[in-house]
Length: 187
Length: 187
Image (cartoon, rainbow over all chains, first blue to last red; front, top):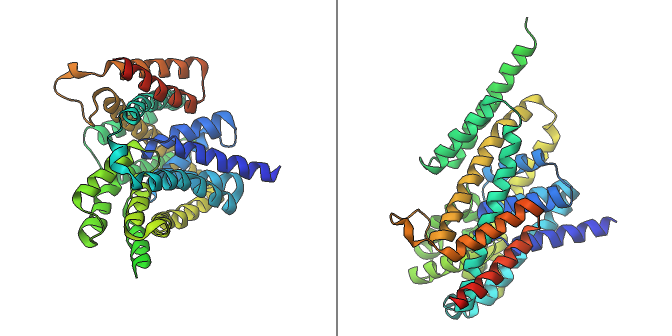
């Protein structure tokens, strides 16, 4: 049973990493599908928390997120396993490519498949944004919705540093908690 | 010693690339082109193209590529380890704190404040990817008529399948790749 979990963890991480084109955030929606919707190892809220931690830590988001997922499912050893699973596909693929990279870069078939896959990844991300966005709107509170749109404008159009946005939103969250607490318990 | 230099260079890249993905690019360039004479500028832009076309985080991809160029397969492994070492330490520490103090109302409030921002960031990354898929560039061009119809078709089909039948995204991506090869060779 335990062995089975480790195998599944490794294979999931390997599979996700091998299919993550475009880097960065792309792996988050894929992880959400795999670990939240399919395997039910992580709750949706928790996945968003882990995403925030992965995003605000240094290093590749895909690596950070897989460490967190592995740690959550099976502790330190789990984290080691998912890191290995995440790092191996790019390590193997790039090792092979680096020996004949100019031929690869100019290959027509490879280019066609990659262009097709890019459209596929875009569809996956849009699907997940809608699912995640829904869970924010369902709370029926105004503040999170304002934060959502404000951070979108900040990151998309004003190119504000992501770390800064995370810090500000953390402060908003803290102040909001204090405010709600006080409202609930009038002196 | 070359192995130690590789380890230290990519350790720094891993430590200071906050925000993931393209945030790491200038750091990598600085370390492998300017500080060390490991790659020429042409080789560097080649590896960035390959990193975009292949799965996996850009930092890991370039660590592998540079490692192989400089010191063969052992070099690739050492550079990759250096790259993920800071992530492992910092993220596991944060994960420990998260699971230890998750019950605290304040921590929950802060994380709740971060959730809408996470959705906004994924949405923004998603839009960039859609633009990349439809126009082959990172930003929307002035002339919108140059849209890639095949990409739009693959995107629409993938999105429909995902929303309607909740298909595993890995299959959507494999299908998109196959559709790309098929459709682009007909045209």
